[in-house]
Image 1 (tube, rainbow, N blue to C red):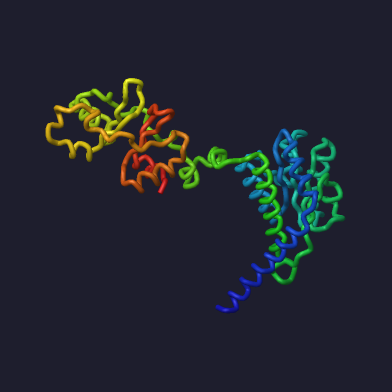
Image 2 (tube, one colour):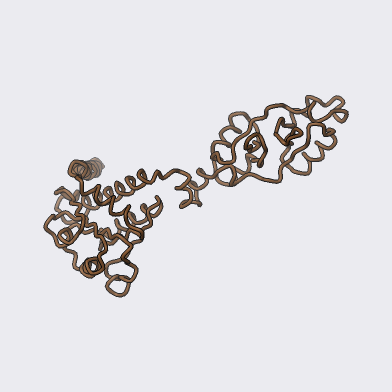
Length: 314
């Protein structure tokens, strides 16, 4: 078992060294690549063959999910009609460790023919790909982690990291926020965590005026099904909330009272554009089941803790 662990550590450390060389070797070519992408009105067309292609698919997916329209085009398929996907409005990001991958020839020629900006990523500065590229990003000479230089390991890790670096640089320039990120990730755990209160709240709220008799308040609590009702003043502002605890505390002569006499004033509220995860944290911390969403003291909706749990926010 120790032999396996030694191998694993050697592989990881070899790739770490490659990443360090990559970071140290970056120059203004990286900045020019970012500017080329920012200047494109179309998409980033990512392409690569073999392992570079697998890495390219991930880079395209990362770009697309972080605000930079991108698409992977397989170089072999490009030679059989998919070149039609690559337009003058696009910028090409082509990956090849050697820079001499023959399947890339037609794609490279297409970029030259139509004046499509080409960013090349390869390990050989004098390779065909980097000589034809408008911006050449050179991978440093780092040993592959397999030990015999045959299996793409360190080289693919460096290429993947370079793609991540491009994506994050573009994100930061565009001031890409978690709210933007959620637009491209509406499903799954991430989408749930980034959901806003306004996405989950109910707009048909339990509300009664301050002077409402408690018989009316009890009817609203029963009909709406949240176990509470908000209390509003004459201007419609939320000024209080009636919960089951308030009902127990005023049990004697309850039906002879008005809503304002029973309510808890100044209830906890939240903004509709706040993250639902924040609302859930408040409800759990204060051991309450509902929060009214309020804008300028005016109630906009009500969020129940079960709404958060059903959405997958835990």
